[in-house]
Amino acid sequence: MAGISSGAKRTAVAVALFLGLAAMAIAPIRGRQVRIEQTRALNSAKQIWLSCKQYAIDHNGQFPESLGELTPTYIVDPNLEAIVKGGPADGWIYTPGLKETDPGNPVVIKHDHIEVRLNGSARVLHTP
Image (cartoon, rainbow, N blue to C red; front, top):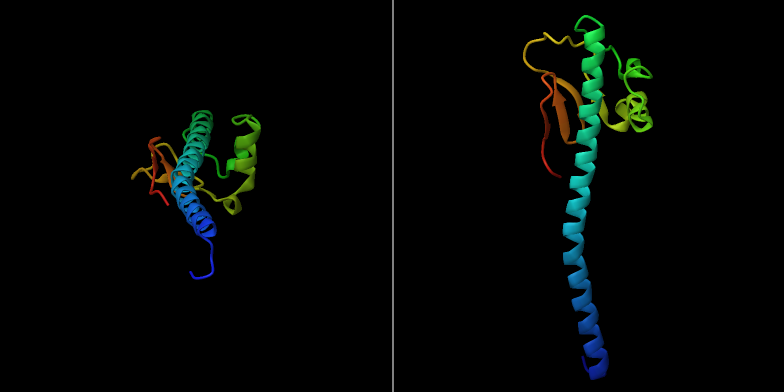
């Protein structure tokens, strides 16, 4: 580093240290954001599942053929309405035509890394 003043060297080292510390701080923040997004998706999926269960109570144990059948009677939250009207393009996958008595506890609704099964159990599949 001939020709570079000691002040410039110190500044370069300080900038490098700052960038390193900033990079280390970003990872935990991103991890928290991912967990927040997963929690929101899990809560939405559980609310949709509960709406499906209510629908099934009113329709002899039969879940709706599409999530669109849940509005406006069973889902009134505008955020959930947008999800049930959005379909697979928005990352939500619904298994149509289930009955409360179906064997094997199939997945009712899935989004990215979460799923809710027929018995109401919900889980995060893996963390990206």
